[in-house]
Image (cartoon, rainbow, N blue to C red; front, side, top):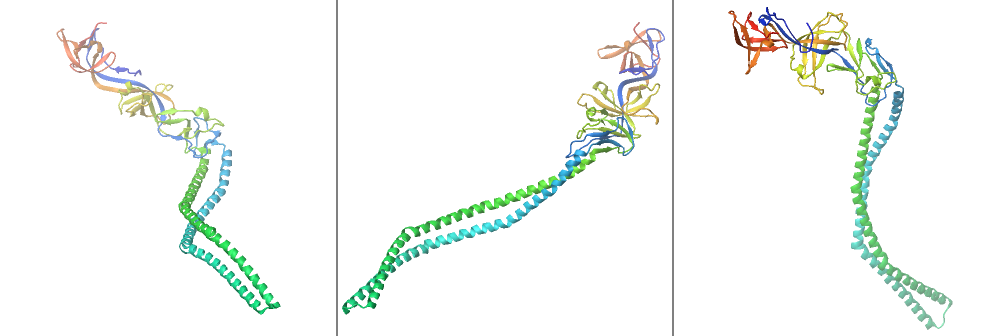
Length: 465
């Protein structure tokens, strides 16, 4: 069977004479050819997905296409810088925990002292209010009355001493003789009068000062003290709870940061697992990614080398377990896609394997195109146990898109089409010709399938060469 794109192979009986074609039953088959790739049906794409560490420099690397055993090292990276960073991170834990404990203690203290400070401000305000009220309602009048009473008392004392002196002088004058004792008494009385005068003078000054200055000052100071206490209480009532809330938020933030730091430390420790990548089972290693019916090396040539840096979340290698079945994958255009359907039988050949063909069947066919406008297909393939074919090798698939075991065909050139009808010239037994309307089916470049209008052994005239 010859393989050519859109080729149609048809088994027909050739005409007995030039310009004639005898209709016979034959196999009518249409095929299309596809370029395909053998790929394994079960793969594991190896990637790294570290959360905290990013530097993975390759020390040891398994070659592309290597056959490995379970546990064999595929990639090994240098952990020196990572180990230093991990040690420094672990050293910072104690300081972070101590700082958090201190903040929590400060918050606990503030929970208590805030209430105490508010109560202290409240009591101070009450006392200032009481002092102002007492002074305004009672104290001021009492202090003013006391000041005046001191002045009156000083005036009375002076008048008493002066009256006593006056009486002594009068009494001693009547005696005519002043004795030594009497002189002493008079001196003492003069001194008392003098002292009383000075006391009166002082009292006048202090009374005037009290009434004009100190008592009004006291009233002003008590009012100012009350105003200050009111402001202090209102400020404390507003700000102290805010300060407490700020501390609560700060401690909550510290706790969250501490928990995040702990999580990051755990993630950092887990990132150590990516320094050594081993084979999950016996199998074969492919560089790049085998996925969705295609194999791509991607950018592996830039990093899969000694001292290369492994990228995060990118495909590094694809691991294929031993004895994994292969399938054939092809990417086709819309023209071929419309000729295919799930279940189409096909035959695969491989360049280099002379005289060998393998049965295949279409099992996957995309319904919509991908970003390149093509459609992915997948074919199962029956390979012998000792087949040398490996994943990544190329093959050609001949897909049977139509087959009729008992088809009637005529040369396409014998058909005349007019007004939507197809006719052929049939040679009758008496040697005459008759135009016969037919219904056509599938066609190829040289032959067309006839569904109705002709029977076996009828002779159709064809144009002369």
